[in-house]
Image 1 (cartoon, rainbow, N blue to C red):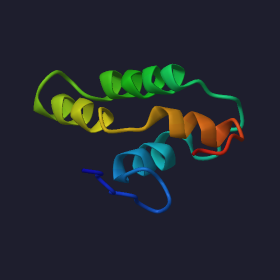
Image 2 (cartoon, rainbow, N blue to C red):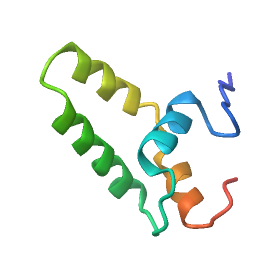
Image 3 (cartoon, one colour):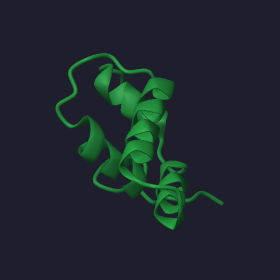
Image 4 (tube, helix red, strand yellow):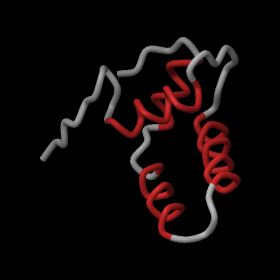
Length: 78
């Protein structure tokens, strides 16, 4: 069963939200793992251990990092 949760043209809400919050205006090429590590670092720096960080980490688990990288690398997603 396909889960179709597209949001504003992105794979899902989580991918869209991370894109606008963390990468809007980004002008360099971006690798998926690099993007994920950057956002994980923001979460670690801005939150203390506990439920808020746990929820934020779970939220990041739904992000399509490949789609974000493709967007900034000028590649078309399939």
